[in-house]
Length: 213
Image 1 (cartoon, one colour):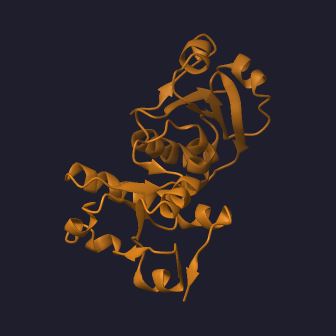
Image 2 (cartoon, one colour):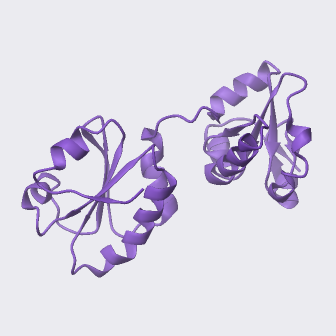
């Protein structure tokens, strides 16, 4: 989805009135760091199309918006959710950092499972965690009861992931993106799986149990 250019006149309609969360890229044509950030923002716009609206604002041509955000340094990124500023960051951020900014405000994916939800499902014996990292990572630490199916073997071993026992298979990686991508591919092939939001990093950050060694 292309990044939409908005101005002082269209900002209220396109941003504050948006049904989706909005990532606002505040930039200027002369700003070299802004040019470094621009392709990252465009990539996120493509990847999160339908879940996130991405717009850009030239602060030189739109003093009203610049004043509203109290812009003193650019590039600046803002997340607007439900018409309110939910997050604000300055500088050239890496893609992962921008995704961390917007992820809490994205509409939930039907296949997404939060760490506390997975913990409850495991306690009820209604889920099987599937670790899709490499073998050495799995051997160091993993979610209790997790089976290991490396990412590159998922398609060939898809039959193992079909929930014949009624327990949902929940894919996880170090963070969200790899597991979500793998889950999307399997679901398109007719294999109903879920993925762990935040991956093993968030699982551990939430103080949930892991097995080591």
